[in-house]
Image (cartoon, rainbow, N blue to C red):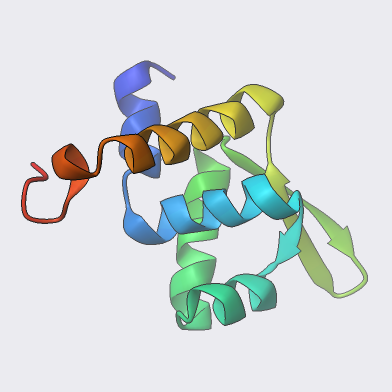
Length: 99
């Protein structure tokens, strides 16, 4: 995967929200995302499937639940850096000014 492909995979608001939650919590199930993001379960599942297909998240079964986590430390660090950087440049990242 090249850089552009990676950014395309994470540039959706819901997907990035999922990744931010995983970066903080390490591992969550679909119901956790639904509750924390206040999004419908089918939407969350769709975005998790996309992130998994891109290799950004991985899952493991725990009983009847699938537990999701970020696939590697470098991706976790990237999400952390993007989150911190976006808070430092709010004028450039405001909704009115985004591309």
